[in-house]
Amino acid sequence: MTDHAALSFRKMHGLGNDFVVLDARDHPLDLTPAMTRAIADRRTGIGCDQLVVIEAARSTLSDAWMSLWNADGSQTSACGNATRCVAWLLMEQGGGDRVVIETKAGLLDAERRGPKLIAVDMGPARLDWREIPVAKPVDTLNMGIGVGALHNPVGVSMGNPHAVFFVDDVAAIDLAALGPVLEHHDFFPERANIEAAQVLGPDRIRMRVWERGTGITSACGTGACATLVAAARRGLTGRKADVILDGGTLTIEWLPDDHVLMTGPVALVAEGKLDSSLWE
Image (cartoon, rainbow, N blue to C red; front, side):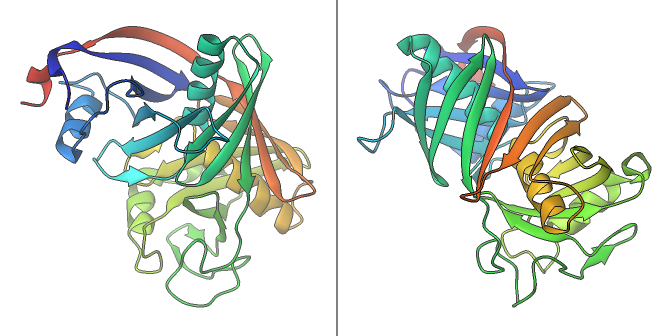
């Protein structure tokens, strides 16, 4: 890593789903899983659900590349709340109201909808069993697996794998116990994000999430997108709904072209410097 002792960071969050954001556009960073875990540690580091790295654009169609690291040091391809945070930063720096962010999941278009309100086109929902992926051919509308009170999920990929379980009372689900079992289930060769969702009406869903590589978080943008798609596929809601998470509400719309539009707030908490003693 270049210049350990002078590494600037920003602490941001979207509905409490929190991130340490590093800007590597001018000075590339050689991150390791151990460094990521040290920074993400809530007792001895800065603390975050994910570490986000902004890198120079790799395509002429984008403004920047975004890399994502989970708190356990593993990498992931997509994060809706982080995308909104990075989009806001890029808009503030560039002075415009639209940006395109490049990720492993593809190009994501974002636009400003208010002072700290950002809408992101998260791309198309992927519904084939091979795209999620799962271990064997299955109808992703009714995948059949389950543990305890969570059973028969809907499978959706938003660039990362999701299993959405519909329940009568989301508050009664012991997500801390069931989430890690399902995340690591043999059915999910790349593990999975686990959502427990309760439909409150045709345009309102209450959702809690166990995030792959992180655990319970107060919000998950891709999880909210997957949950709305899953609910619409089952005929439980329309194609637009407010998804109410522990940290607040995201508005999700499954567009006619099958892209999923996510709108929600961002917050900048702090800016500072990371000392290399954190990981050495």
